Image (cartoon, rainbow, N blue to C red; front, side, top):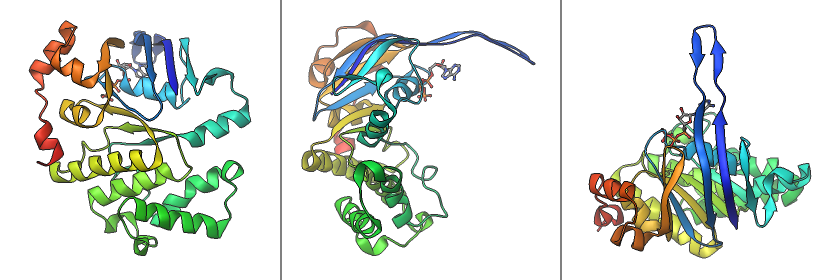
Length: 267
Ligand SMILES: Nc1ncnc2c1ncn2[C@@H]1O[C@H](COP(=O)(O)OP(=O)(O)OP(=O)(O)O)[C@@H](O)[C@H]1O
């Protein structure tokens, strides 16, 4: 579904009024492939390049070299119409459900907005968009009675469910989950993770799951890649990587952050 081939991203050195910024090699020869229907985890500490890679997948930034294929097509070579269609197919859920919902918008407007943006692709009229928003709320475990409420009336976990409904609104096949539970209480984390697993099974979604929490990764991801200073240090089946890590970096990461699956699963 998603092939990342030898992607590098270098931010050039810059001279500014208050001195110069050195060049940064944020990604170096990153290669990985995400299969349809799986959950693929990307683990790395702060500054390792996770956001930069995510921005390349969303086509918000362009690699310095290398290429990214989505469903076999080079993202850099898409026509404007194909790029618009791709934007509906690849959606993201951010870490902070408090910051990522506009407090002035109703849940209805938040969830129907992506349908409006992608109306050329989806072809839904006003009533159909409202009906779909109500269905999506039901799907994420919030009833349609919440449609005309505003974000401040919801808890953190409920807000993240609204963010998930918004991400699902244009009918994506790939969902990028950028630390989607790390701003939530532990008990709520487990509920949201279980919801994500359930939605994946029902809708046949593919997840690209970014996290620094190995417990969460182990709970949800089929395969995982570890990124360190812009380079992939190891990747493979999650279970294998935890049981028999091949790189020193993986070993040190596992030693520093023992995965605690029981806590995540709420057991
Ligand atoms: N626009 C930019 N210009 C210059 N350097 C950048 C830019 N964006 C990111 N970087 C640098 O690239 C490196 C990778 O940053 P990135 O934000 O991708 O890491 P990250 O793994 O997402 O970190 P975090 O978990 O803290 O979000 C860092 O050294 C960062 O300072």
